Length: 322
Ligand SMILES: [Zn+2]
Image 1: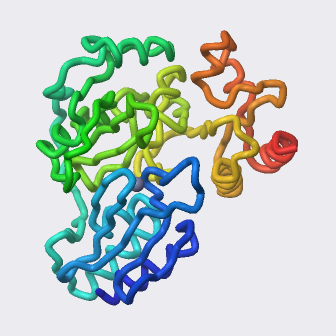
Image 2 (image 1 turned 180 degrees about the vertical axis):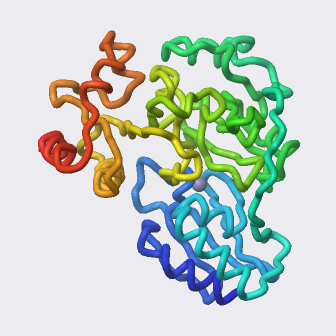
């Protein structure tokens, strides 16, 4: 295995749950892309392995297969930057590895691309599902055979035997170009969300094409939640680094789950970084924005009055936890 690759696997290993080295060039852990089994915390179906001169990631739960470069970018975008530099210095020229060159040319604006799929409003199951969550089904698409359709845009799944229908949530860049999509399962026993990036250099963010940069930009945990918050974007992976966008003001909105260690850890990290966050009132027992909206709560009001940073955020955070 490439020296730089094994070094960076070592650097992220403490962050990967149930991480273990199986062989010199084979590592196994819980897949951070799909979260692996929600019911069984012992299941670990994510693998990093070397193939020819490259290192690849594959998960036997969600079926995704990525280059280590893309995988690292998902897990830690800061470390990923360092990694690309080191790869560049070591003169790496792997097939799956493209060293990003600085971009100075401005892209021409493009028209928002329609997907080659029916709208979610045209299929009974996806329409009913979205409407039951208070969402507009004509804003999303429907893929009867998710894996097969995905592979026509980007070879992502090696096996398409156990295919399934999914709601497709398109991800557009600031200039309206399609950078990827997220597939939301319609079957209850499937991996809930699978994100596929068509442009590997783009951040895994939903809603970039519709925000006003000079106004407060809210960041929610998922695309559906962001549909209810004005001027918001949503994370479709780990917390992305938003520095590149030069937003005037950013406010992070996490789910209202003080018993969920993963959320607690991310919220604390965001506060420690000095960013603004929303701390939900302890009287609010709904665990996400969608449920609050469905319960008739004025969410935008709670968001605006519950935005804190620094020491004040720390105090409110501790109170929320207890
Ligand atoms: Zn997975």
